[in-house]
Image (cartoon, rainbow, N blue to C red; front, side):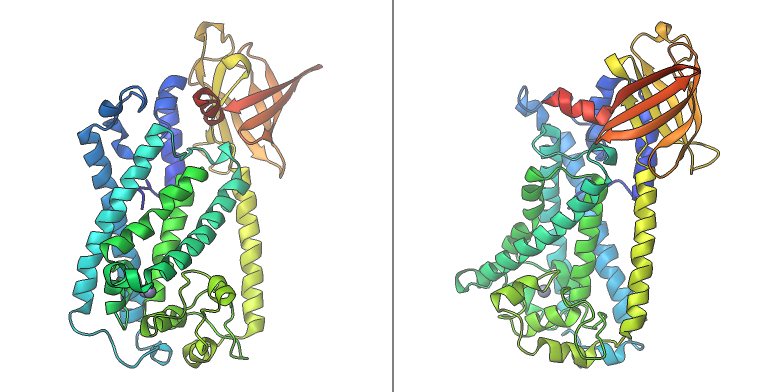
Length: 446
Ligand SMILES: [Zn+2]
Ligand SMILES: [Zn+2]
């Protein structure tokens, strides 16, 4: 529901490039919400000072158009992708896994596409509110993963998904109440035999109920744009898969789902055939706890689900965990990027991957309070060419911009957003704390 610039990697590099282009802390602050390109048109004033200027129409329209484009693209790629791959490309191969013999009725997909277009327009309006909330400082979308650390980043994605599942279950139960169903949820259930395009086929009220989860969650939970990107991508993919009518989740040889706590395609397909059961979205927990899981769910699931050997699955799961662990370690290692301020705000040092080797980090003098006091380097000069990660700290030869001394430096994360820097030039050793520009922004905003 939000305009996200691009993939993690592309986002990071774009962010770093913009860091090098602008050397002032103040313009850095105004660029805080730079994940939205329309910020070029955004008013520079604060919401409290000039609310009308803040709500300038060009900037709002630009923001809405951008969020609409991103939401539409996600629906087309997510729902369309599942349809093309599962329902068309693999249809013959997965024929045994088809849940019902019949297909959608004529005209259904067209109706779903039209309703989905309206849903995208509503999601984009709520996404625009998120963008405005972020500009006004009510919602916190932070730029640097290092601001809160990688553990928070990963946990924020899990919390968003688990909280959304609870929101969906309870709002969905409410939508099935006799007083609300006809007005708010009937259209979704007109797709008695759903397709991936059913995933956004909502009445206006249902679209609003679904959309408001994210801004409400973001009022409580600061989030990184990449975490939001993962959340919404997972949302559309699980949603489209749940409506595709072909079971893709595997079953064990004993007939039980391989991952019993994830909702399968059969799980939601049963909801479309018998609306009083299976209200959950991503997880089976709420339906089990509240006694709303379809009594024949496991039997129906086992009849169509692809069988896998549990031993093979364990090996695959183990390899996945090892790979994820390695990647997480690597992600930790890559946290040393962005800009850090030295004590007294004397200088800002920017860390970035080196041009000649993306596995090594380079440091540059990005900004200086008094450039003429920097006897050892000028703004833009490289201070460290080969910082390498040894598992706990970044180490390498560094140049002190103040006096030109060369020393061997060690940089460790002291706390989220703070770097403990130690270095010795001969017998003289220095220990300093450098704060990320992102952390300083938070302090200045308070
Ligand atoms: Zn559905
Ligand atoms: Zn329903």
